[in-house]
Length: 237
Image 1 (tube, rainbow, N blue to C red):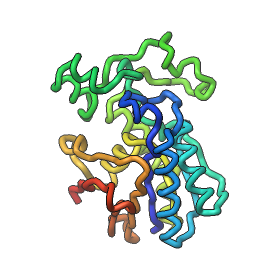
Image 2: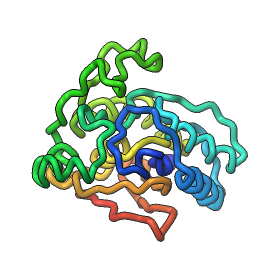
Image 3: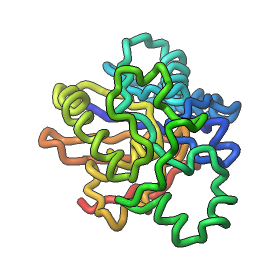
């Protein structure tokens, strides 16, 4: 099978401000641009071809991918899919995380942010951050107002199984430029992580995660290319 390179976009402007972002279409910060460039150079050092690329509808992930492809000197067509968007943070969208934690308390904050199946309160449709009036989603019938990680998983994994996995089976190398919870959801499936442990899986910005599979689809190896910024890869396999 081919290699899957999963990359959480470089730091965004709202990451830098410690705000819940979700589906709001903010761009990369200066640090995020540098992280994307470093990702490209790390992938360049692998000296392998990349056949197909996937990303979300959000420009922080799209721009990360385009910066990487520019460094690789590649211009393959890439697929954008809303199913690969970040988790929708509902009424938490736009709020500062530290301030929200103080207001809600440690326990409730943790439930909203890291539990498997508890979504935050819905974002009102007339909010400035609502996606209901965003032209990007004019063809999407079921725009979420809030999502748990399980909700995110329930859109990411079917998309992966239908559109991405087949290319891996054909021995093609794939770059997936997406988001923390997109990759967390995918990691839950690939690494067989339990509902109780998935909250422990942290995904650093702008650090390519390279996953190798054997012919049966079992993981042979997985590693972050930037050793200085890696996090633990949890697996129950």
